[in-house]
Image 1 (cartoon, one colour):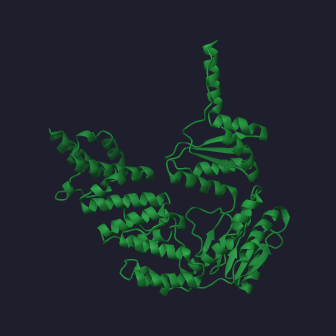
Image 2 (spheres, rainbow, N blue to C red):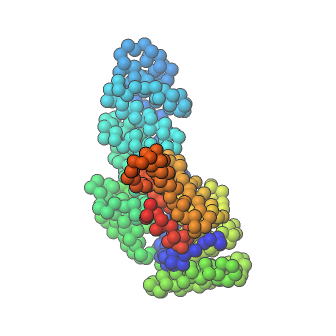
Image 3 (tube, one colour):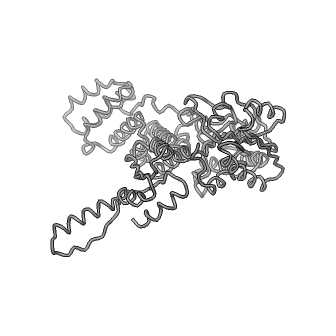
Length: 491
């Protein structure tokens, strides 16, 4: 935390959003339990046994398919039976044997229908191993070629789940909606769960042409556009009227009928306004005050978490009845508060709690961490999920820099190339660190070697930087970024 908010400008920009976030969180929290993580949401079974057209009449085991393949003299028929054997192994839960078999197949001798089955079997293997991007790349070109309804549904569910695991919720919802059009017997609770996690920045600018997906788009857009509880409720009511035949109608109706929509008037903010973290607490406080000035009828009380113990603050809040709480900020206070949270009150924690992965926060309690480690982790997720990128991280060789690099590296997609951290211990080392990381120093060494070898021959050469770097992340404060950027521009 001693590196938190090293740039006041960045702090105010973050903190100004807190009250608005608290208000919208209050609306959503009063309506329903916060959605669980992607891995916990109910989904259609992507690991269920796949019945291929050749195996519908008589379900053969993998060994039986292999025996049939041995007896075949026609190469295409043999490849088809080996693909069927790979599916049978997967249905038996033996993915290792399936993978070994798939690696030996020759797609050049396959018929088009068998190539589609091969792609689906390979995608199931990638899905089993958590290689989400490979699932998408394997299936996306094939989706419109599946003629069997069940096989297409399986492909759609696999690609939807891969997008969901990558937190690309709008893409996941799009494929789930298409799967529902293919098989209306699927559990639509999974679509509702995914739809509730779609952030506004993932929504396409234009409404989709498919009517069912357009309904989801309008519902999510209206939710994000609401600025108050009344707006939110009105948006849902308008959606019900406009999309009365949409299959999500029952969920939205229940949502309206079973929940209370309240506007937040009383907000309590818990910050360190004295002691070692006073400056950080005051920066967040100033941002909240600036934001509150733009809102109507909001009453905010600030509580100094360094001047009073948390039990005393909780006792005061119980008597004052705030509708929303922002804070605490320090990790030690967040950890302590979560042990005895205030149930029934919306709370936005300003740091990530140290809890087991299977811990679920109370309804209406969310984390909005302002610490630099979380920022680095989110940056890695954003860069890795945007497209296939290679990344370099520049960081000071310090405790804070090491923590940020570790957070970035741990959140970097395993399917990407390894992150290359480039360290410096002083301002004087920044230029050298940039030149080495971008390959300019190595280029200069090569030119020097060529000139020595050329002797008296004049060599015209220019140092060049690496061409395989798509993203650079500076794990540091604003001052470090200002010092590093000119070196990066030059190189």
